Image 1 (cartoon, rainbow, N blue to C red):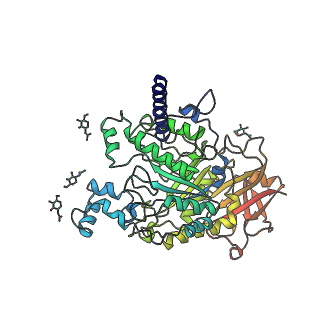
Image 2 (image 1 turned 90 degrees about the horizontal axis):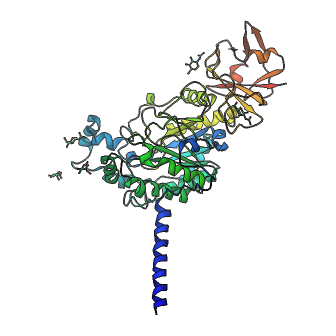
Image 3 (image 1 turned 45 degrees about the vertical axis):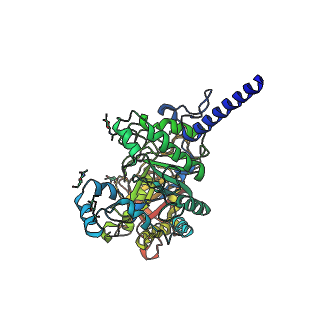
Length: 486
Ligand SMILES: *[C@@H]1O[C@H](CO)[C@@H](O)[C@H](O)[C@H]1NC(C)=O
Ligand SMILES: *[C@@H]1O[C@H](CO)[C@@H](O)[C@H](O)[C@H]1NC(C)=O
Ligand SMILES: *[C@@H]1O[C@H](CO)[C@@H](O)[C@H](O)[C@H]1NC(C)=O
Ligand SMILES: *[C@@H]1O[C@H](CO)[C@@H](O)[C@H](O)[C@H]1NC(C)=O
Ligand SMILES: *[C@@H]1O[C@H](CO)[C@@H](O)[C@H](O)[C@H]1NC(C)=O
């Protein structure tokens, strides 16, 4: 009898321990997977040692989608709710004019219908645009999740609005097209009462982080296996509050995406530009010079907003040449281009965005060999002709220093010079490539006109290359010269 009672007690105790450990593994990210000197410790010094997964540097071109409840008012920007609630006149007037009194932001959610959302058609568009990865807002600062978060009851796309798992459907569709799938994920939520409680406690409590933030992100990682975690909304609190290094150690050591995942740099106050697999710095960051850490220029085709705005004007939309300037200058300086468009509440990508993206795809179909898999060259824009940007391809990929110019050991396969302006007299003048042509060992052709070798003349350290008749040239807006050994 005593033995029986004893056994029952042991069983109960064991069940309790199991229950606790299951809860722990579901809700806790403090299990960083670091043990016995193996793996990454949860500190920046250790995490910063991780080599960049090669696919990301090779990809160069991504598409960014800001999609959420803000697509319903589609006015101003994706910051609609915050701007309205902090009494920015334009937003208050818009609501007074167009919605009944006491209308709440939550009432927009059922109007986020997505009835035309066709993930396969979107994936085809992104593939035709030449993109190699997609980043979708799984949750913006409004807190609405595009996946069925287990902790966002009635404030997610399956419970209200589309009634569909948008993250799930789009991730499957883009992978079918051979693109990598990534998620944008906002750390903070403007009006989440649990977050606001932590904030009110000077971020000395971590209730939001432990019970909402990381459990949600773990759900995303387990269910959709994203290749990119694009973090944002970090700036109000230090990384200690967010427990960022714990999460990243787990991500790199123990998560199902540890081999290929890449993360950006928005993991707490003062972290951007210092830590992360790649740096975004600020929005639309494009330094115009080579950086020694992998970076990404996240920019918008609608120059004003990330989320869709119904009252966009044509002059606010990036032209083809502005788009190519961003892509070319970014890649030349070691960056990736992450190009944002905002889908509508109906689930469409408006034709003017499609047109820009398809233009890019057509340009890349001719000039892509100067972009994908390329590395920075010794000079970025030419010192004589600053509208010309260089890249090169190398025999071996340098995983520890992907954005460095070629080293002495590198074998360069080709040098590319991308001209963003066609010279009036058809002679393109360059400074930085002159010594290569001087040697007489190189040949020059224009991509799209394969096998037609161009002539040049050298004087005063400059080379003038005679371009073909512009009427016979296939590219529009930007043109690539390819330099190879004879
Ligand atoms: C915005 O205006 C409303 C109504 O006048 C007021 O109750 C509220 O406190 C204001 N909010 C802020 C953040 O100023
Ligand atoms: C708006 O809400 C206030 C406060 O609850 C209430 O007094 C008022 O009658 C409401 N207005 C309308 C038009 O429903
Ligand atoms: C904020 O914190 C103070 C104490 O520091 C407390 O008195 C107050 O009730 C808190 N407010 C909220 C909304 O939690
Ligand atoms: C190279 O590009 C940078 C950034 O766009 C610009 O500031 C600089 O003037 C350019 N160089 C030349 C020689 O035009
Ligand atoms: C990578 O680049 C660095 C910096 O240029 C260089 O020191 C290193 O030897 C390179 N590694 C390889 C494998 O080429």
